[in-house]
Length: 389
Image: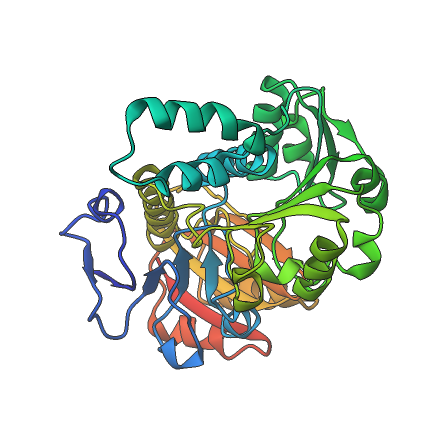
């Protein structure tokens, strides 16, 4: 039986996909095979000798020390795209809130006295509505930095609203590029996109190259009065540079899902309490996707949507399956196969893939290997983890 330790509130629609016959799922499980989390911050203290995988029900993994877990042979999964629609809808909300006097208008109405006469309120509304005038999105230019699952959906929605859409993503995958609408005008560099955009929306992970990507130098390329939207991560933006740009008028508004004390009192900010993926549907989608990926890994050794291991899927060909994680160095596979041959264990099928400094192998064999055989493979230099599926 596989043991799954859960953290945070995981949607029941995901958890029910673990069969009670094959899985024990609990926040109190010890020596778990896998951890299922949302925002829980992990450390090396969460590792046990049996731990093989972490599944994050969400896209970001900045709450997981991925490199440390990789070195321990622990696969880290995320759920890209599962919450994309929820974030997309909030970005559209941000576009509308920043282009119209919606919030100020709503606040003004609620500030009127409860005992005001209907005729007087109607007269006041007609007199004051000019103070809440805005602009239409149709015909304006939206620059999208990051064209993954969320960025692509934001682009599609903006096109439907009649906006001109520019896109920039130097790390885009071939698969993601195929999904993009042909109306998106691809930009060769960041500054060309920013200098042409009335609105700029960020959809990037936090990595070393994106940390403080929007800094003082980059902000100087914004159109005067442009709007910056950040529904990715706080660290992508140099907050002090944004405040200075708001004060100078370089930016008209900063819309973000990541409020900080420095932004709270600034009237040109629209701050949301990190609710981009806070919908029932997004939480269910993320949980279902995370659970399915964990099950396929624990039951078959297949890897899909890992942030630190190669994608690998091998259909079962009967018999038994060995999963092996090793450092990506030469002659590893030969040593492993040599041990199996010495034990007269016939290999039926196999698949080997690497990613950066890590390699992963699935080997289907006809007969069950003894623990002695598995220990011999574990004893090979640079082998990190071996288990029988």
